[in-house]
Amino acid sequence: MTRTTSQSTPAPQESENSDKLLSLDPRTGEVVGRYPVHGAEEVTDAVRRAREAGQWWAGLGFAGRKQRLDAWRRRLVRRLPELANLISTETGKPIDDARLELVLVVDHLHWAAHHAERVLRRRRVSPGLLMYNHAATLEYQPLGVVGVIGPWNYPAFTPMGSIAYALAAGNAVVFKPSEYTPGVGTWLADTFAEVVPEHPVFRVVTGYGETGAALCRSGVDKLAFTGSTATGKRVMAACAETLTPVLVECGGKDALIVDADADLEAAADAAVWGGMANAGQTCVGVERVYVVDAVADRFLDLVAQRARRLRAGGQDGADLGPITMPSQVDVIRGHIQAALDAGARAVVGGLDSVRAPYVEPVVLTDVPEDCAAVRDETFGPTITVNRVRDVAEALRLANGTRYGLAAAVFSRSRGEELARRLRAGMVSVNSVISFAAVPALPFGGVGDSGFGRIHGEDGLREFARPQAVTRRRFGALLEPMSFSRGTHTVRQLLRLVRLRYGR
Ligand code: NDP
Image (cartoon, rainbow, N blue to C red; front, side, top):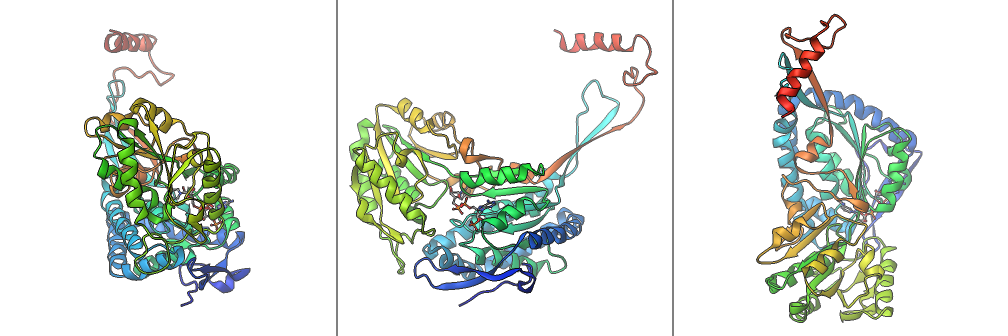
């Protein structure tokens, strides 16, 4: 089936270079959709129209927006099989993985719509002792138009972490999906337009990196980027030209720590799933494991047993789909090769596991810490498992990365204590990636993994600007902020401050 653009994207005939972007099924190479390559003018025009639409959307208020977002959510649930198929077609991932992704999308959309008013509405705050004669209020107002640039690995879940929360906060959105998944982005905007037909509140522009770069320079009020660290830096530089604020969600090199008292079966299961689900193409996936020496042999056995059972392929029932982005296959091969050359041992698979577009599971152990397989994002179904003396060494190595996205700890007695010592935006104890499924928790990293947060209350506030208002209710005994203040006013005020704060 061939898909084309529709009402929520600028019309193809408006495009300078329409129908240039072909969406392919990475399992077969078959063309599954054609989309316009939108140029800078079309992107700017989409943002201009979204700005007008955004005023209407903001004017609906929390209740009006919630009603529309709920209608969209119900539509997504009803047509979930259709979107799951499209995700599976454009990324090659197994259909159940696509379904799971959409379960999370729906839960987040529900949370954002239902909590926006509580988090963002106007509220009174205490004016404090010195300003007792004023009323103080705080309100989080919409920014206007939020530009969203998304990756291909979770083409619905990842951008919706920005889109759903930005819409709930009262903004219009212009979304540039990855060139590998333009159909998913277009589908999302089209179904939104079905429930909000009045104005183009949520629009999609399609194309390559240049289209994303044009969105950065289009005058959006904030740019929410999810993708690689290298592109994140380019996005930030482009946004700096116009002082456009950015939210940057980038890659990771997430570690899983296995303590001596861990449930080893559960830890092995989590390491394999966290490292290899979605063929390892998960920003918060497990890439490195540090296991305490006392339990390392048993743990490695359990990991190997589980990893050996997994099958990569395009057929029904395959556990792992293809590597969606063809150029990543060379990166994965390079990481395995360099690790083996440096003396690492392959417990499962090896170089032969790389059969583009598929990669079978690879488990490497005794990998020198300076290898790319330990330092850089591999983004394939490979994990390194290195033994450590104790958890102190595990923490030191886990934290010894320029990334800081997520991490996991398996320990029966001190999981939460260890979690707090990890330099990561998110940590799961005795599971992996669980934080992503809790809408109330903020999602994001530190260091090369970026900054800013999607999801939760922080995720709503990320797409709003706080406005502080004070209202003078009555005259005060001391009025220091006036040229007509008495000669002793400031001295009296100082006496009051000494009494209140000086002891
Ligand atoms: P990329 O950085 O290659 O691309 C991300 C998006 O940026 C794509 O839409 C891309 O468009 C666009 N883009 C490319 N060049 C520019 C530019 N100069 N200006 C503006 N936009 C541009 O990442 P991938 O799509 O390969 O995604 C994988 C990466 O995303 C991994 O590093 C992964 O860890 C990270 N990621 C992070 C997540 C997080 O929440 N922290 C979640 C999911 C993934 P096009 O595709 O058309 O080139």
